[in-house]
Amino acid sequence: MLSRFPSGALKQAASAAKLSSPSLVSSSRSASVRFASSSASSSSNAFESFMSSRLTLASATLFTAGTVAWYAHLYGTLPFIGEVHASHLSDEGLHPAAYPWPHNGFFDSFDHASIRRGYQVYREVCAACHSLDRIAWRNLVGVSHTADEARAMAEEVEYQDGPNDDGEMFQRPGKLADYMPAPYPNEEAARAGNAGALPPDLSLIVKARHGGSDYIFSLLTGYVDPPAGVEVREGMNYNPYFPGGALSMARVLFDGLVEYDDGTPATTSQMAKDVVTFLNWASEPEHDDRKKTGIKAVILFSTLFVLSVYTKRYKWGPIKNRKIQYNPPTDKTGH
Image (cartoon, rainbow, N blue to C red):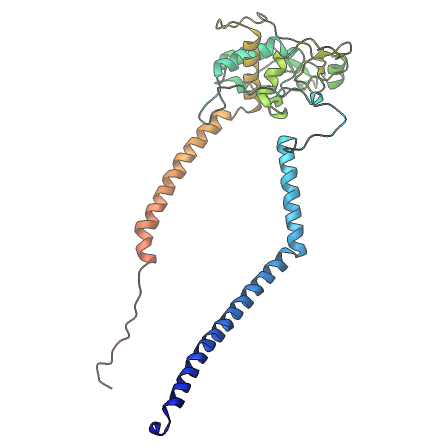
């Protein structure tokens, strides 16, 4: 039958097929493009709906507000934003410098000789006004004093005890289980003896003050004359490290005020360093034991981690990655 068609008709049919094939390809491509664009548009619409939902906006707002509040809690101010308040920055106290305390390292312990000297400074200078309610005589044993030395110091103090067989209270010498005596019987007596100011207890003073040891050391050594234009009322003392600049406690540390038993020169900075070390120990008596326990725990858990990795790799690895193949039994009877 092909022989009946003229050659011109065959040429026209071939040219028409050539022209129609690109159109078919282009139509199939356009369909795939339309399908891809529709899927992309659907995913973009889902993303836009998710970003514009109320839950997402509320979560982002809470996260931003929480981050700003936490940063302000840690550092006090926000970066690149000036403070707007009626008071001056000096009212919050001069920020103390960071000193290289020997116990600040991860593997460093307290200087126990400094603790002993610091207790001497506290006993001869600070104990006249400040209490140390959370420290007992037994806490000094093995840290700064021997048991006999601590027992002898405790026996120098009279403690009220009782009642006895007659129902009366009596005085007895102190023992290791007793806590260090307070300088005043109550808060009213403490205020009356210090012109209305209440001397704080020093048991947790390092933990209770922003700046810790650096702040207390700077406060003890930072007494200067008030600058021009600053008025300090009678009975107050100027110290730039104290919030407000004026405090009731006068300067108490002077060169040569204490005579150390080990012959260390009793300069103002040395006494301040020793008493701050002692107060830091009083705030955290478990400091050295905590670091020792931490080192042991790190060594133990590191060893267990290595053993667990070895067990996972060489014991459980082949078992978990093995291939289980089931070969059904063949019928040997031929049925």
